Amino acid sequence: MKKNKIFDIPFIGFDYGKDNGWNFDVLIGKYGNPIIAIKLKNSVQQYSADPDSYIDFHKTLNQVCAIIGEGYTIQKIDVFGKKIYKAEKSKQFLQQKYSEHFEGRVYKTIDTLLLFSESIDKKKKYKFSEKKYKAFREKCNKIYMLLKNSDCEPQFLFEQEFNYYITSVLSMELKETPSFNNIKSTNEFLRIGKQFVKTISFVDVEKIELPKEIETYSLLGRGTVKDTAVDNFSFINELEHYNILVYNQVITIPPQAQRQRELEKKKRKHEGAGNNSPSNLIVAEEIEALLHNIAMDGQLIVDAHFSILFSANSQEEMEKTESFIENKLFTKGIITSKNAYNQLELFRSALPGNAVELKDYDLFTTTSEAGLCFFLRKVTP
Image (cartoon, rainbow, N blue to C red; front, side, top):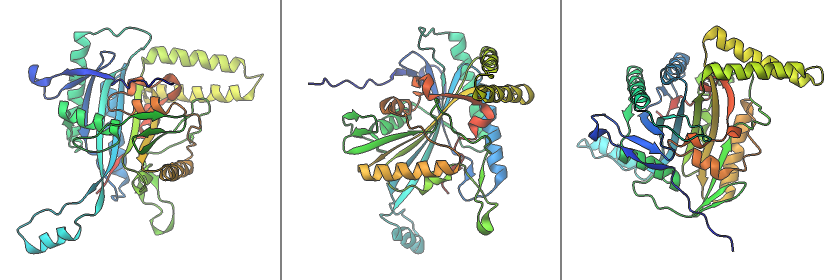
């Protein structure tokens, strides 16, 4: 008989702000790494059709990367849920009747979190540094001020909010008091209680199939509204057959000088093998283009990961939603990974603050400018 394994929570506690005079609590990961989170509002309205707002938010995210700097991981998660509308009480008769008209209807919600953590080398034991810890807190305070000035309505997370979002993803239910079930892992999906849970990873690092160019926004490209600006991943709001959906966006900023040396070495290696295989020359040219962008535009080299995690009530609903997402991503030039057999690993990495658990084979190297184009920008109106 196969023995069941215990699902270990990848966090060990909190460093409380009230004990230190901070306006936030710090979550401590299982490696000892501190995690600070900010809840924010994506600054682009869903139907605004304003390209400048997409560009401005992109610039804000670029500044966030520049402030946090190398040696840190940025995780942005957008949590989509569904709630039942309850009529708001009003002293005005017409307003009350108007609210009652929508009583009991299902509406969609979106919560956006930006989480920061020290990057972890799992081969080495984590070494705590009070100086680095202080610098990390100061960086997060600067990011908070930047987001506030950019009208993103930031709010630092405390223990209660951390627990709410972690337990919501763990149970795949947006409830104040979630109920936990056993997790059964297969190569294709997870079973959490009666729910079917699937993680779709955007990139297979063995065969990366992404568009050569990507903008900060897309155009509808049809009819009289063909020049209307929309989010690159606006299709997420079209999905219906899910209970909860999490768009997991991760950028890790490695030591820049070391990574540039590694890329130069890799480029020379592929150039040397170019006579034997033309594909090696193509790889060498792509690395050269990446290094050129870094030198000319001051961009950062980053390791990125993007995935969509969702739950459904049946396998049929799960497969229908999976097919819809893959078809929409295909129209963007993104062919999703067919080797995402590590469903439990991907599920764990989507937990708020646990992006450091991502393995190298789930990350791909790109520039900060390109990576941030995959970040969700719009918010439901």
